[in-house]
Length: 182
Ligand code: F6R
Ligand code: ZN
Image (tube, rainbow, N blue to C red):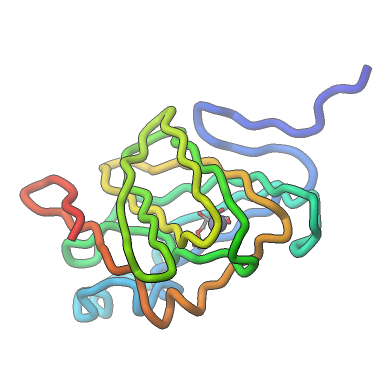
């Protein structure tokens, strides 16, 4: 019998094994995402906002395969707005995805193509089904790292352009020390 080749540590979200790739997004990569552009320009634009590890066993675009990933959104704010991911629709619009909370506290913003947006609370053990045609963005509304796992079809692709153009219609701000969806 062979040993397992891929491991996920469900405590700290670390993926280990072949074909695990890590990407980082620094604040500069999120230009235009935050409402307070003055606070954005005054921030350290080289700080890491989030990291994504992906088990990329398939090439992007391949039908019938899956990707598995773990995102870590670091705690922080631009003005009163919490650190978040860029967010995207899938390029193949009608492909779904699962997200699951591993550690920390956050909000999953879900927006349909008409711009109707809602937020689901994310915490350790929470499971989130994201149907096709729904844009999704993670917001870290806690004081520690927000770790979230995900599984999605390898032909889904990512459309960041629509979000760069129109944004999400709701944002999560820190008001009186707690997260508010505005
Ligand atoms: C994959 C997916 C996640 C995100 C990750 C980073 O379809 O939804 O793995 O890619 O949370 O967020 P983005 O891609 O919006 O920078
Ligand atoms: Zn996605």
